[in-house]
Length: 535
Image 1: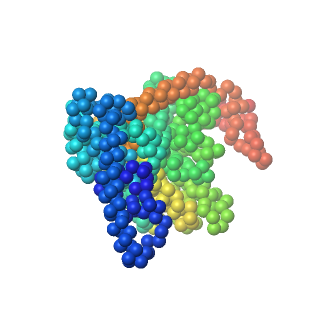
Image 2: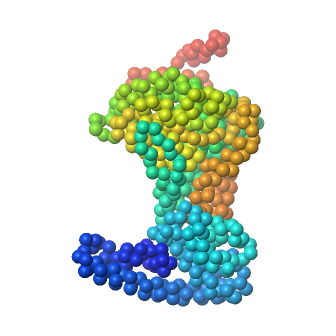
Image 3: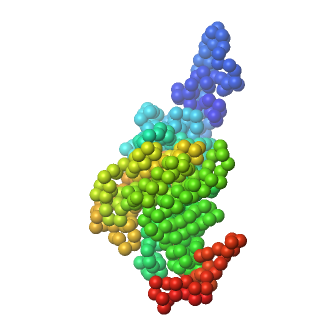
């Protein structure tokens, strides 16, 4: 078919004969509007050529595979295919369909490659799968087709290194979107092995960092307020993948992972939580007040819902500074379902709609506002419809690709001068509202365990890597081990710091002089007058 030169898809009968003929003969660029006589000649010639190629390809596959399977040596060995040497010697002739079957799965233009899962492959080609089963060791059970197919595919990819890993992967996720007064984006995404690996590493780093925060809070090296993000990593990762650095981002006090995604480091986040001067905001912001102007990240707001009017102001600034007719950088304000019915949000949304501001009102619906479920706190649980005349989009907040593609769609809409949009991310937090909330008095442990097993965002990406790329489970375990070590080392470095050591440091970054330089304050009145700061 021209993708890899193997013609395996034509051999298996899943290739388009006419397309294959045109590609092989270099006729793809010819006009399809040929005279009827010429078209008939081409069709007859293509059918004849394809049957010849099928026969030749089968013989070539036999010649290529026979020495490797008979000797159980080379890259397609009996060890790689998880079968015994005795089975390989006795049933080596069955490796030909196994080879063709597995090789087709490495071909990016073959229907094999576009199956949504190994189970789909089995359903489409049961005969080939049964042939493959006959040469397998008993360690791979027929009732576990996913494991079986991964073993076969990895063996074939070893023969053609890098072919599948370099190709794009198309993932479909039907039912991930619901729209209000707008069209739904396509429920599919094109990605790659490298991209999925990066998402996996980012989200696993977020998860380990938040678990470390939990442990250090219990050890009392972190004090005060602390709201953890584990379970919601797909939102921070997906939104960051869809936005540019010119876009403004502001969120609630559940902001550690957003700070990490927006240019922060694990050490900087942990040091800030510990109140040390080498933290991301100099040890003065703490858990709820991260900030990174260079990456247009504006925090971290300690007051519920207060970030939304500020985010609307950021959207106004983006529109004000963009030349007329050009696409505008957008602003996104993230808030929880518990804040969704606040008056300040309605007022900000009204102004954004009147002035056609490039604002994304993003509700991270983790099902509970503190300890109150959404069914008990809001008369309308379809938060994406709350904008009334403002369009809205609901997406699966546990699927990083759904979030990325959905936010790309929303960004294109709002940046083009169409006004704001409401977005609802359906997600779940594993921890309680904060570290002072055990999170089990208003929900049971079975509910949390079920979410971990069925909708965990990291496990979703891990499954994509195992099903659609040549990444082995052992590689992912090694990555997890490395990340755990990196986070542990960052935690030790964070602990080694010290708090701000002077009054001058505490009074900086409050006021600016007219020329933009810092204006240190000689006196700051505290609620307790005796504790007021005097430089």
